Image (cartoon, rainbow, N blue to C red):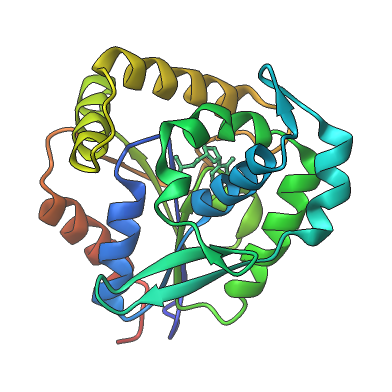
Length: 231
Ligand code: DC
């Protein structure tokens, strides 16, 4: 059955180009785009800034207790036309993308109470449909009834190359070795954790973008969406 405004869930491993696709697709459809990873990153930044991580160990009771003090929302950057994450009134879009945050985010994202808070907020944002959200558990947990579910993959080498290029372009000096280590560590934690692990649901369609251009990937996803929407 075709619907007017659908919900599109995009999941996959780290640095597969999920957010790029979600953003492009949302723009083409006139939908809202939400990068759910930004929310986990913002909670991780809060955790670091409040010294709830010592020697790589998270003080979970302290973080859980202060979850009520974390206010997150997205604000549209009118120049880039992208939503940017605001953490307790401060735009943290740049800071959440640094290796310091990438190193701890998967550990913060395993905490049940963190997930419960963020899933509730993600569902609120998507209540009226007309949304493309990317992450790890969007099709499995956040919107299990999403009309379109995509599972994005790409080879590890291509993912490392893309993420390394992105970080270098932002002036972050990091080796490919460190980028690869972080990606593989996050993939392992994200897909083996107890709470909402990254999985491909049976109804998700795989797009392997290893050899696709950004535009080819968008066209593939757009055609799938078009077949479900009353335009
Ligand atoms: O998409 P990303 O790389 O910015 O996400 C950062 C981390 O957040 C990722 O390693 C796992 C976690 N995450 C999650 O557990 N669930 C989501 N829906 C999105 C991200």
